[in-house]
Image (cartoon, rainbow, N blue to C red; front, side, top):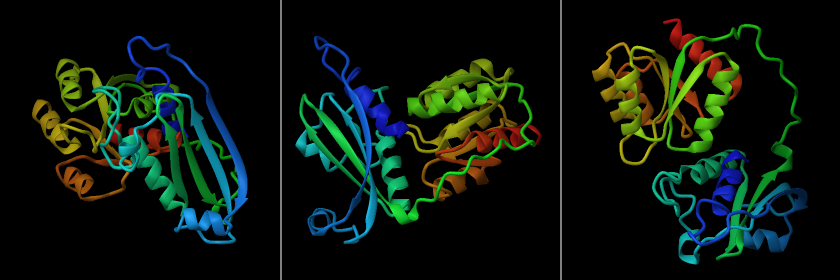
Length: 261
C-alpha cells in the first residue's frame, strides 16, 4: 500500500511537466469477487471459482506509456527522473503479492492516470490480531544513518527509529551515504543499508564503509530475502539482516542487537 500510494503521488506531482499543475485524486477501494470464467481467461494464474479480495489504487496522474507497462514490475526499471526513485517499489509490491498467491494488474491512460489492481485469495487472509509491543523493546539512543534509494522506505524507517528514541540521517544512494558517514563517523552509532540500489551496490557500499571505520555497525536490509548478495555482505562482517517490509518491533530489535555487540 505504501509503495503503490507513493508511486501514485509521484505520478500526480513530481513527474508532471514543468508547466503542468501539480495535484490530482488518489482513490483506494476494496471489494470481494469470485473468479469467474472471464476473470480466469484474463488472469490465467487465478483459480476459477475462488474468492479474492480486490484492492484498487487509482490516480489521476501522468499515466504510463503502453510500451513500458510490461516492464514496470522489473527491478530497477523506472519511468522517473534520477533521484525520484529507483523502480524497486513496484518490484517489491509484485513479490509481496506473489508470496500471498495473489495477482497484480495495471491499466493506464497517458495524461489521465493509472489503476493498480491487487487480487488476494480470501482463504489465505487471516484476521489481524492486535499485538502489544514487546516489553523487551527499550528506548534507544544514538544516531542512525538510513541508506536507501526509496524515499518511502527511508521515511518509514526514520519515523520508526525516532519513535524508538533514536536520531536519524538519510542518504538516497551509496555514494551520498558513504560521504555522509565519512563526515559524521564519530557520531553515527549504526546504519541501515539497502542491499539493492542502482549504481553502487549495498555490498560495495559496505566495503567502503569498513574502509572508513573497520568497526562500523550495519544492518543489511532487502525485500528479496537472504539471497546471495545479502549472504556475501554478511560474510564481510555485517551482523544483522532486516527483511522488508519491516515492523517497528523488528527494526528496534535489530538496532538493539547491533548496538549491544
